[in-house]
Image 1: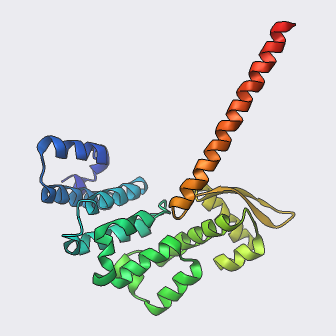
Image 2: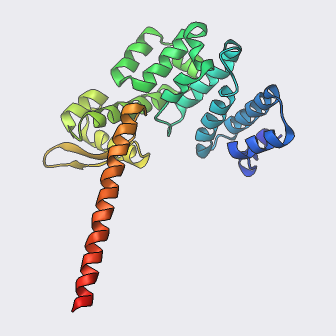
Length: 256
């Protein structure tokens, strides 16, 4: 009923709330799955932009209820989770899905869907174009989305990969990698990328480069944790130094 009336956005259906209800009601696993599927369907019908991320979260939670023992039975749920993740315009990291038993099972039950997931985890625009050329009906029949949406998504992901490699990218190289050759269109794309927080940076018109100050990681594994630890240590050291400097200034003021 909420789905038909598009009232799902008015209900408190966060994963925390749902899990709390499941615990209170002692909902069996199959019951949890049915509820999560219903919430997911309602969010899809609602079609508001802010619901896309919720759809992804709900489907991820649903797949989390499966283990290696019953992963094969989750084929439809796993396919929908991958589809939801890939078409969500604000989701850029999917490597955690690879660790879910239900998604792993797609390697044998639906190899193309699993390949599509891997493509959006670490592939580039060129990889995507090759995939679509070999499987021309996959986007419309399996992912059920306009290809222009996926083209923008894979271009954003390709840009993020380029940003990981270097923090200054020539606009000529960027145009080549993203297959966008009009300067005005390329600048608009970069602005969009910044607005959706794929990267942060600015275009240096004189040098004809994109200077990247930060970016989202497409994968977040041990290497990224090590990098994060290093950055946090630097931040803490800088804060300590600032504190010491302020203390020293205050001390000198008191001595005047």
